[in-house]
Length: 282
Ligand SMILES: [Fe+2]
Image (tube, rainbow, N blue to C red):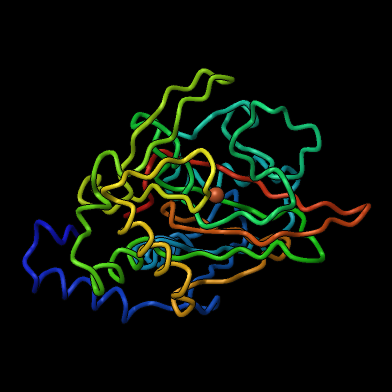
């Protein structure tokens, strides 16, 4: 809900409902899926209801399947994901293995493919407007023994908390709130971004706490620092979960981070990822 275009009463009703309905208990946010190749009506309903309310839903696949990657894609298509980003690391359908790549080329700029901590961000914060990532799915094939915890925060809640404390949300909605500079190695042009915008009346966020390769607009800098403080200090609204094998998550590209982890010699952390240019909703 765009606070700049709605009455205070409407906005307050929406924001209060959002905060009151918040839960960080996994039990409230997870759906058990018996067969990912053919999900039941009730499983689908719970998935859609949960993501509508929280912009995030976890799932757990109970039964082993022969071709896990294909099952994950089938599951995703049954609940409305699609139009996936296809890049140099994904397969032809857009599924990417997230694991440590030891031989990263220097041209690779944005790399979850390490064991280091990933700071808070939304996916595709460097994508141009034709390739916005509106939702994504992660599935845990194999987990690390130490570390590898994910944290999530609904970007709608970050927006609400900002508006509770400050009256300059407009500074974060400037079309050039930050700039991702040109990358000469990959040929990608510089791109200007709003942090918050509305797409079909739904809040969309492009954001990263990284310090390198991101230039904050002087006009949005103070507001951005306030937003960073809010995200970091709002533990109450963080959802923390370390995937067990067989678990996954789907989100409307909410803000998230990952702690560092260590692989064992014979066991490596491996997640599957799909990034969709469609938002999940009923
Ligand atoms: Fe991410």
